[in-house]
Amino acid sequence: MTSTVERETRTPLVRLTDAGKNYGNIIALQGVTLEVSGAEVTCVLGDNGAGKSTLIKIISGLHQHDDGSYEVEGEPVSFSSPRQALDRGIATVYQDLAVVPLMPVWRNFFLGNEVRKGIGPVSRMDIDFMRKTTKQELLDMGIDLRDVDQPIGTLSGGERQCVAISRAVYFGAKVLILDEPTAALGVKQSGVVLRYIVQARERGLGVIFITHNPHHAYPVGDRFLILKRGRSLGYWEKSEISHAQLTGLMAGGTELEQLAHELQSVGQADAAQELEEEAQELGLAGPSQ
Amino acid sequence: MSQTVEVGTPPARDERVATKSPFARLMARPEVGALAGAIVIYLIFFAVAPPFRDVNSLATVLYVSSTYGIPAVAVALLMIGGEFDLSAGVAVTSSALVASMFSYQFSANMWIGVLVALVVALAIGFINGYLVVKTGIPSFLVTLGTFFMLRGLNLAITKIVTGNVGTNDVSDIDGFASAQKVFASQFTVGNVAIRITLLWWILFIVIATWILLRTHIGNWIFAVGGSAPSSRAVGVPLNKVKIGLFMAVGFMAWFTGMHILFAFNTVQSGIGIGNEFIYIVAAVVGGCLLTGGYGSVIGAAIGAFIFGMTNQGIVYAGWNPDWFFFFLGALLLGAILLNTYIRRRAEASR
Image 1 (cartoon, rainbow over the protein chains, first blue to last red):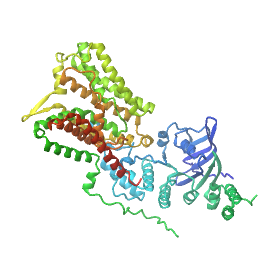
Image 2 (image 1 turned 60 degrees about the vertical axis):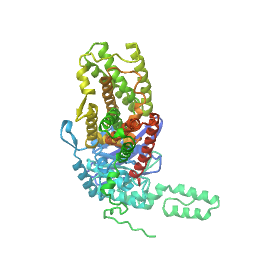
Image 3 (image 1 turned 90 degrees about the horizontal axis):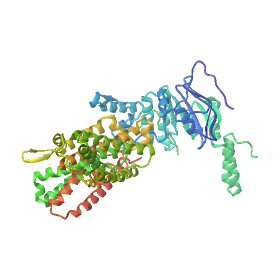
């Protein structure tokens, strides 16, 4: 099922080959292969506990892989801190976004990377520059903020997500890891974030998009990796898999069918019928056992 | 039920956000509640206590405010950084005792004792900070521990060294006069006697405000208090910032201790207990959030001024001073309610 595609000439920005990670005797991740190049979106799908967070932690430098190899631009690496990953241009936008809600947008944007002017005791932040830059960078991402002085906590979830993304881009990220950016968002907000993912790709960045929602992944993704219980369930190019197939794999066709049987046994025949049809439609469930 | 998603156009400005007037902006500042409170309290005492209206009384109020306001400057920074220091009150006494006893026992120049006390005060701050960041135990508990330890040490060591509960008079020691000039002198403007602590207080407020609002260190202080995991994730040296803040409290405690020593020539080993709460009250009344990430040094200064006014005003008004702590508690409660309301608004639509 897994296909490895030879890409001529181009070295992927990030490539994991048969990577694995154990926590004591618990195998958190095993035999996972993934790559992302510039101007590409690689989606990692999986349910809770599938190993998505472990995968992010390896790529972003919070943990080291135990098996397999991890290469950045063709060079084997093993990061011992997120800072090292960041120095290689791998930036992670976590679910909690690493923003401080009570602080103004511009202070958040430059937090940890403040631009200074003056030397010695009069060294201070170049507030004017930072404000203007924040406004401009956000504008480039399509967010027109009236006031970069408003606390970032007053922005909507999607806007905050975009501030975090444009911050990573501004500070030289080549690869963006987005950890469930749409998980806590409504339909419209999710659409906004997906647009920024496309925009980041158009700017030539590699994006690793972690999600459990195939409907968000399929429209923007170029490759798809599905994880289940720490193992790779498959790795596809977009051309090799349809939206329906992806959804079916994520939903777990057989599990849907099982649920249908259970419903039938408690007298919910209509619902069961519906579910079964849906499973068939997804093209994944075999004929009922 | 078809839904169209506009693609390609930037999201329109949220029409639900009203434009803020300059007045609304002022109202959103952390110190505004304290300022309003200070004006009200000033007017009340101005009305009911004729001696309060005298400009010399104002100078006294400002002096009392400054002795609490100086440590409150650092306590406010620490609180914005998300931590507490309950040992600050007794650390003031410890600094004064160390300087006094060191110079007296070793017959050293007063300034050497002053420097030794500085090292001790910074060390106390460092230990507080180090324990908090390395153990992850809330600073409330860590500094409660150091509070009791210092309280015991102050009494025990003073008794061992001097055989008494107070230190010996140090006014004959070399360097006393110059040190007194720096820490506890007084000068007159017109016919108003001004204590030098007031000038120091203003200087500390200006420096701390500048650091907080204009430098990257200030950005980091807000960040570590507002969200520790987030600031760590973006590379803010969280441990250094927090330890530094505890050491700043140590520095201000040292300065206040030096003032007490050179104002009174001797130090009683049991004083200072309970003052840590007054510093915290000043900071909270001034708009600092107990949970960190929000507040201002100017607010804490206004808070200390409110404390000084109430403290002296009750005397000028001829009221029973027993009521003082009741007022202090009521002020604190009112300030916390106001702060909670402000923060809800700042974090609205999260």
